Image 1 (cartoon, rainbow, N blue to C red):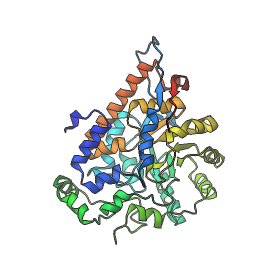
Image 2 (image 1 turned 135 degrees about the horizontal axis):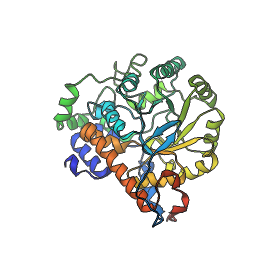
Image 3 (image 1 turned 120 degrees about the vertical axis):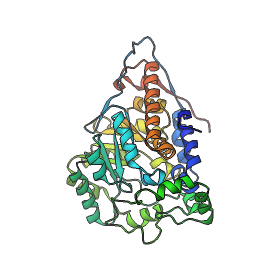
Image 4 (image 1 turned 180 degrees about the vertical axis):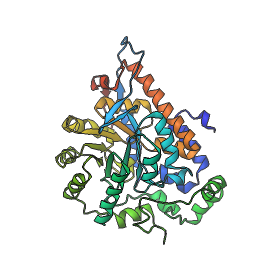
Length: 385
């Protein structure tokens, strides 16, 4: 399969699978336990039908939105994700170049492979810095101060990952950082020499946000071990309130799934929340973000910017989430598979396809801007047992 023959998420996934060694593909593709929530995230959109309006005069469509004080040309953004230079040697830089062309939001993860200063210095799109709450409070303060000095406008604290999810695909292959594989995992690398050539002939793999603070190279540390050993399950609302105050700007909680937590986010001064179950990678059996979105928007949508992510594979999925009241929609695997398949060109093609689908769907719905989308154009089908 070639990149120019990729027309949807499944095509990009297939091309990434051809290129990546099995353990790395399965790290992106996998989720927790039985992966029920992972599957449900996308299935949830299929239970929602669109009811279009016609003869609405839709020659021009404006997809722009304002999210946490940032103007985006598109109502979807690339969620910060970990380890991107394992998927393609350019990693976050390839994504950033594509994102900049489309005028949307992106950011670097605590487990990112390019420094937040690199992205802040070289790219002008709105950036979010996604980080985790560590047992070392000094590390948390230092990471926030570093982002502030780099000029990052949005702090995004992930709150659903205080311990690692049970990602059994990684356990079977021995996926860890640095790589310490099972025999089967090593065999998968041996049959994908192109990946190895690109990986070993470019700059050394690093985790620049953490390398001064966390030794992940002395022995193989799995991502699950990092969550379990380094992150602080005793984190409370009081801790986060202090961080919000210290940051003094746009502060978003990623991983909020209940109305009660959304209200508490407002109480401590957050300006945004992401309704998310971490792509099904943490608590299997968790409700899908799309299923939970309306409940949260109804409760707090007039007081805080509500975003969502999880399972988004089509422009129509974005449209449905916006119709329920999301201010913007995050994508993860949707751009990671194209990144793995073809680097910057892959991400650019994926974003172009999503934008084209969304523009087309907006016209077919009879809407010229995102503000015209509403629940009156949605119907939910009853589910069978």
